Image: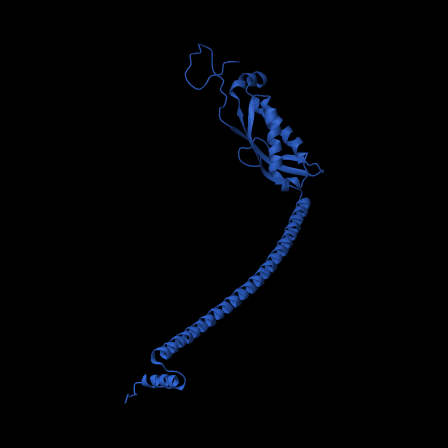
Length: 248
């Protein structure tokens, strides 16, 4: 009961033999098809409805507990696992309402696996995983669930539509604010450009006036002209700049 042999060759003597136990994971199913171990289970929910479920689970024997397993169950250990699994599934199913099988299936699966693990460990095995393959609710209740889900979807759709409308309104407000900012920027830019242009024109005119003043002052000083004589001199210079002018 304490010496567990691995695969290999051993001398055991005459009239002795090995009893083999699977080392890999094994699957047990309660379903309507395939190599099911048993038929689907009819469970009673917390709110009194009869629900038919198909369940599959995987277990694996614990090497160090093989002796205890054989001592307690001989080689018929799967019958013990079958009884424990059914009890766990039936008892756990009764803790949840029918609607939970629609909305909280993962939670129910986790609860079944946790309870099954606790029971299997007492007999030298571990529950690796559990799957709910199929759930058959009463047709009247299933129709109510569908109607409820449709109503929930419609409600959610309306909420999303309201959120979408608010988002569109927010976008319109932002667009208007941005358009106003763009117009303000363009107006400021236009005003700045006009101011810069006029400032440049004024600076050019001022430079021209300053140059004329400088030249006029130089003429008065160098030529000794003033008054009408200076005006005539400037007048004749302007005429002489024309191509058709001649100096006599």
